[in-house]
Each structure stands twice: as C-alpha cells, then as structure tokens.
Image (cartoon, rainbow, N blue to C red; front, side):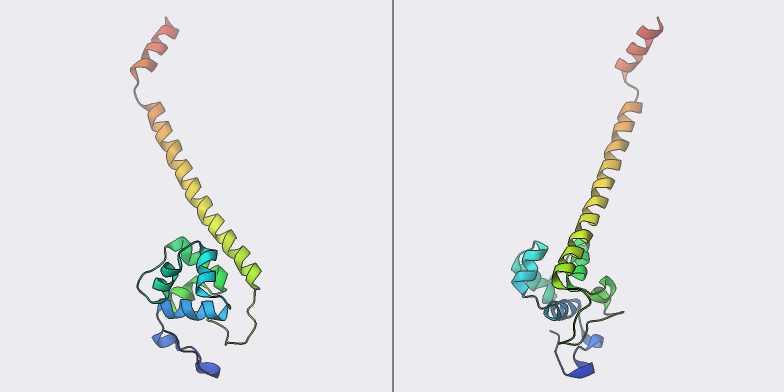
Length: 145
C-alpha cells in the first residue's frame, strides 16, 4: 500500500496503484474505511478489496469516491494530474461539502440513467404504435365507411 513519508516524497506516484491512491486519499480526507464504505453504500469488505487492488468499483462509484475524497477522477484512476495535499494540509473542501458534492454526482449519474431508460421506453412505445396492427386497420376502415 501507499507509504506515507516526509515532505515532498510522502506519496510515490510512480509506483502507486489505484488501491494505493484510494487508501491515501481516504486517509488524507480523515475517513476510516468503515465510514467511507457506509457513505458510499458499499460493504466494508468491498472497499477493502478496492484498496487492496482485488476488485475495482463501477463508474458511478468512482465518481462518488473522487468527489468525497476531493481528488480528480483522472488522478484516482491514473495518478496523473492534481494529487493529494501533503498530510496536515487543509483540503479545499470540508468533509460535509465533499459529501454533498458526492451526492450531487451520484444523483446526476442516476438521472442520466433514468433519462436513458425513459428514452428507450419511448422508442419501444413508438415502435409498437407504428407497427401494423390489424385492430388499427379495422378501426380505420370503420371510420372511413
């Protein structure tokens, strides 16, 4: 896992894995593993597996993690970009603000999925309505007679 060292070398980006970055970001945010798992709505062992690089979270969870931990999604995934502040420095957002940001991100993800589901349902309905239906033809003939 990530080593916490002194000064500028406290986190070695060149050898860090996703799990290392997740662990370091969680610790920098001052969150315990169980606390973060609860906030994300996952089991403790799921978060532990992510931190140990035994499993990876889905996309919507990645966005929530980045928001809650106040790191960029790009950095969390690749280690490229803005990284963590050194231990003891003040993060840009407070924990409550990060939690609200994570909620917003989750809600946006849920809304995108709902909109996609709605569009698909509308398309299916339109196909059904446009299909040749003998009952519709009989009704049309009765009206024209």
